[in-house]
Image (tube, rainbow, N blue to C red):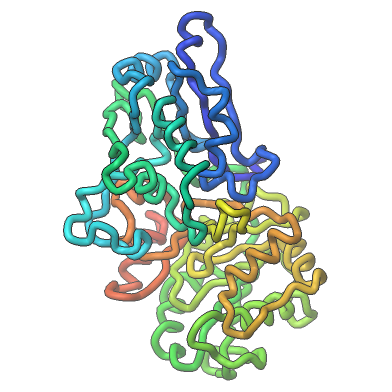
Length: 415
């Protein structure tokens, strides 16, 4: 059974050709200091000493398949003694909020790697990056979209190399490909039961007539156990007030009230809790399939992982708009630990991330959760995914987006 979605790393040496020694494989989630290692930059100094002058380092997803001998043939075209950043090139079709609207005048001008196809660093480039990490003051704020941020760091405002597209790095299996990709949605057995998932929708009075009807017309029908939590009670929805006023910024008070309510006798005891915003679009059947890969007896936190201050030993958190999934065990540990909000309007997902770090509960990342709209992502990233969630109704028809991206083909045919 799959218990973690993580990034793998292969260190490929020309010694494999000469001596047939296997590549060195490192699973990033097995590093002792795992918290910030997933963001890559803190990991580079940890293994740079073992990378020789004629070596490459290749980053892949755990579902990526590699033809090792063919890969080494491709890499031989690029001298490892020179600075090379290789991969399958992606670019934004329009300025994207998740990339802070970088290159807004021409989004296609900047390329970043498709992680599923793999991306490689030459030893020369790796060692220069490590020097920068040691001697430069690195940012310590947010890690949001790792692949784009890594490409920006390597490019270094034109002082470093841009990504070089390599046609043999692929998602779809083609004869010339040295890497291929299966799916981010694993098959770990039967989906968890509808009665094992409790769904909490965060809303407020001003959105009762705008956003709640979208939920009811789309994904609510796939929920067996669902409640709406608002700043006021509304029997027409029905919406429940937990006594927490609405805030214009973060919603930590409301989220922690939901966590406590989930543990009370007012809610049927279930293995899993999903907390979503009222403008989140989600596929509950796909989520239940993904949850079959995890043991509800463990303390599990799952979603789209962001990071704060990871270079300086910060913390990871499941971003709220994409949907936050917690096992019953994890919720119990959070509440019993005494963890709480420093203010009602604190960012709930970040506060939750700090609690999870203090409890040594890892935030498990799935790229199937999305904090933004489909238009905010490169089309190639979405084309082969079975997305679980998207967020925001801004400038889109949310029902159309749900039917196209999140309703399974069989369900779409029934429309």
